[in-house]
Length: 356
Ligand SMILES: C[S@@+](CC[C@H](N)C(=O)[O-])C[C@H]1O[C@@H](n2cnc3c(N)ncnc32)[C@H](O)[C@@H]1O
Image 1 (cartoon, rainbow, N blue to C red):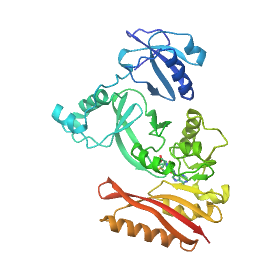
Image 2 (tube, rainbow, N blue to C red):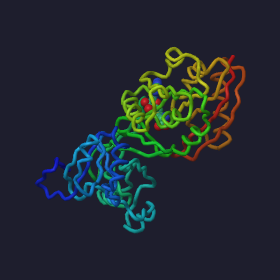
Image 3 (cartoon, rainbow, N blue to C red):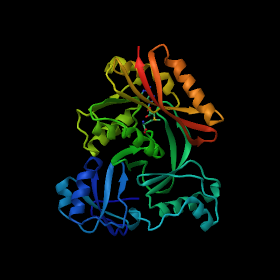
Image 4 (cartoon, helix red, strand yellow):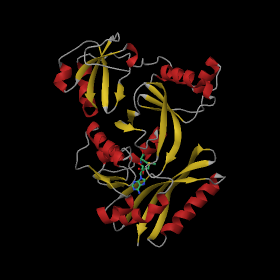
């Protein structure tokens, strides 16, 4: 889909106010105050820019640092009045839909399509049902160490950049460059709500800052680490998007194994959301806790068959891993979430550690 600054030869009939993504918040509130935004359409995010559907050209747009362009009418998704579930769509259209979908900002992600013959149809239906700009299908499973998959667009236009709202914050991200799982929003809120204003926090595997940014707003300060340079690039954008001061969130593009050496031993609370490998980093986390000890939020995957076995094995592994480093461990909370893949469970553990 092509767009040009106020000149078009393809029958454009809508106006978009375009801003660099870091101006999103400012532009949004000022355009809204001037009642310039057409509320029946969705805001669009593309290649680190935000596009607002506006009713008329106005000098305010350039004043804020944006520009006005013409776009085709179908550039902005229409906000749906009613969203049907995937099962309801299946009944309505009489074709098989996938079992689940992830809506992230203005895009939809599908892990698979039951019958590829219906790929185009499913893409189009999902676009209008959820009011998204594009639909992407996973073409390669998530790979370590950055935990990112490959995606192919099956409907709509544009790239995999978007902005997602979660827990009162905005997160700019690109699913082909950074990890993001919208299904963890509730769990992130559970952890964020525990943090106290005087605490110093370390988020060892921060991604685009989904734990660290809301935490930094509440606590004394947060150090957030990720080995993926793109994750840190987006976390930096997200600090600006969410008005997080530089002294409240310090970002590190490094291996979390180096946390104790680079940051010292000061943390009251550590988040370890890398379920595939977090156990291997547990000793580094303990060294990064303040000398007396502190709280660790640890995530693991388990393929054990029963809930009791999942919990017992997780406890055993943790104790075996760190017993030589600690005086005492208390499991404040340990639970197995619902299946994240066939016979694969996420284990959520809050651990109080007293160091030797
Ligand atoms: C499962 S994601 C979690 C992201 C984030 N906490 C969230 O909830 O969205 C794991 C993250 O760990 C990062 N990672 C992998 N190995 C790492 C390492 N050795 N040191 C630091 N970060 C690492 C990946 O790049 C990825 O962003």
